[in-house]
Length: 421
Image (tube, rainbow, N blue to C red):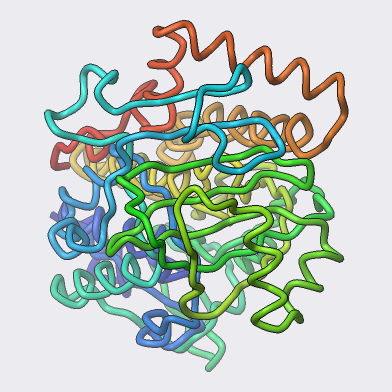
């Protein structure tokens, strides 16, 4: 299957950005018979280096279904840590929820979720470098062309085609271009799509640690006075730590020596998982909100952080981008099957309409969470503690939040249901 008039173009869809969202979209399109082409400013193999991206990602069970459906799941299985429980605590003492129940405490358990494929957990924790490695292997195995290192410099539109100018002067054409470039999207600016957002004045401090005691697949999130602190289980009894600090404190931690950093870490971590040793580099990322005013323009669609960069408080940033990829791939594949021009306004609007409400409501919800939980106001602490306690006592409410976090709510694309296009 080919898009109408495809032979006169370099590809059916040119995707700027060969990261996790862009590569997932390329594989999804290829699984539906389209010809994607990836362009990325970084050498493709550089994305596999441990120092390229030290983060780990919480992957919804629906997102992992998509990777299985497009041929990347098998390579990821050995590196995916199942999340069997999530413990959420509002307090000043890390580990308290694991030792004894507290009023301001919430527990999610995978055994409570109905309607999933048998044996699915709440989600998975996977190191980003392992995700990139599995996706890049699948891209190569599927013979999807990648032009890298090569930046997209400009975008213009003519009847029937998007023209993408590369940094070496080459011009590529396709019925549709997609920006998966991240928050600094060149193509988004070229199309005149503005964005709204703001800095939180916070940084996310990220590192990987080895634990003395088994984590048993339990993810912990503490709402401490300085901001959220997450202990996210990884394979081989390791954990990815993500904690929020002010920008100034984040920079101080970046410059701190190993002993000083470890001392700061342990004050937040507590001792309930035993001794903790840091493995690998420490990363500090500025935290902000960025929401594109539109998800589409003539012959251009946005996915991932190019469309919506959110705070990591709920661990859903990558999942939103993977849902974009699944929805866009389904819209485009169905358009080709109906003989439509995949870059036509009506086709792209179907994608935008499908994803618009979900992305905006999630971005605003995460922003509200940041403002409610990243402070030590006594009244807010009392209110949110009461809210956690109430939700913890109402099973249907717990199940709703678990389904939402797992990507199992709403009008799901086929790939997120584990179905082929």
